[in-house]
Every structure is written in structure tokens, then in C-alpha cells.
Image 1 (cartoon, rainbow, N blue to C red):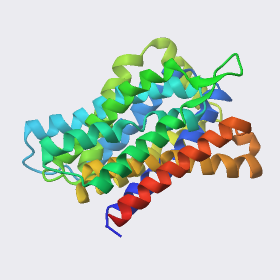
Image 2: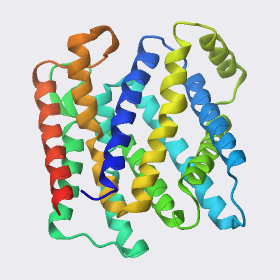
Image 3: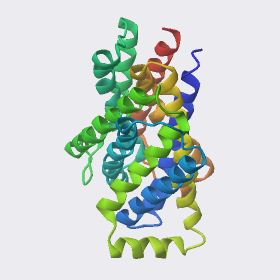
Image 4: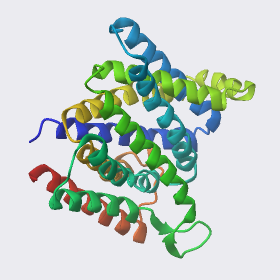
Length: 301
């Protein structure tokens, strides 16, 4: 197996756990979304600052630092959209809907980095994106009909921003160490989140939430160390492998969300906020199978 595939798979596994915890925080604990975003920015900015102070590096060019900060800035805007959708919808529908990003990455990786994909690899990318899109179909709110909900189109913005951040990452992997890229990314994320959401009411809401001993640890876990570890893994994968295929492997996140939701609904139903019955379940399973096929093709090609 290529040495980039394992970290590329472990990253979406970790972020799937994050997504399910975030859904509980936003749905059951009802933290105000602006306060949630403030914590995301603050935690990643703090971790990024500590990392860079510990191992700052020498002779960094301004364009390289700007590109690294740009990773966090683009992700900050994209995550703000995703969290808004996550508060409204099931994680196993929100996360797959963002999996169109591999198409953007694969199309741009060739002119930018000279990465060309073969026929089997393009098939894998298409299958991964198709699986993500399929998972966005389901029962519309307020009725029993099935179809694509137009609200999911806003996630195309998130997908394009995610693609941009991955391409930026690839462009600087020869100039910065992995931990430095993730460190600057955290600072960029902080700049966006606090510019957009730093209001007195948001700060008050965050302070109140963090004062709750039974709820605060969940937020610290899901938006503290876990995202930092996930981004270390994906940055490692991008530095070692073709960014177009790494992005496609990231499409495995819906599988992990789906599988963890199934397991959680059986052993810890109080922690899962998913619709796992009837036609929704069948659509999510079909989506997962498409993505599994895509990952298999990438592994053997």
C-alpha cells in the first residue's frame, strides 16, 4: 500500500468522530453556533501558536507564510458554512454533500502540479463524488417525498474552499514541515472565526457553555486536539501522495460516519442524532458502497 493511503484514511475516520460529537453539541447541548465557531477558532489558533513557538523554523518567505495562513482562512469560511448545515441536518448527509471537492482538486492538480490521473483513477474520483452526492438525497423536511434539497447547494461553496485549501497545502509541502503548515493553518482559522463571530453575545454564550462541567469536555475533545491530529494526518498524506487522489480518499468520511452511526445507534443511541430507518438508510448504504469501491480502485491503481 502507498505510504500516503493510511494517513489519508485515518484523517476522515477521526473527523467522522468529530462530526458526530459536534452534532450532539449543536443539537442536544444547543450551544449557540457563533459561540461554537469562536471556540473552534480559539482552540486551533492556540494550538497552532504553541506549535510554531516550539518549532518556528527559519528563513520562511512571506509568500509561503501567506499561503499557509490561507489554508486556515479558506477552511474557516468553509467550516462556518458546514457547521451551519450540521446544526440543521444529519451528519451523514452534510458530510457527503461536501465530497464534491475531489473533482475540483483533481481538475486543478494537473495544470498546477502536473498530476495526471489515469482512467481507473478518474473512475475512482467520479465514484467517490457520486457516493457523496447520493447521500444528499433523502426525505425533505416537512414531508415524505424524496429528492435533492436545494439547500445543499451552499455546501458546494464549502467543497470548493476545501479544495482550495488542499491545493494550497500541496503547494507548500516542500517549503514547510507538516507541523508548521498545521500551525499556520490554525492561526488562519482563528483570524476568520473571530473576525466573523467575535461579538459580546457570542463570547458570553461560549463562557456559559464552558462553565458546564458535563458539556464543556465534549467541545474541548471534538474541537481541540482531535482536529489538530486530523489535519496533521491529511497534511502528511498530501505531502507524500498525489493531492487529487488524497482528496478522493477523503471521500471515505461518509462511510465512517455511516458505520459509526450504525454502531452508536445500537450501543449508545443517546449519543447519535441520525435518521437510520427505511429509505434514508438504503441511500446512505448505497453511497458508502460507491465510496468503498472508489477507495479500492485507488489502492490498486
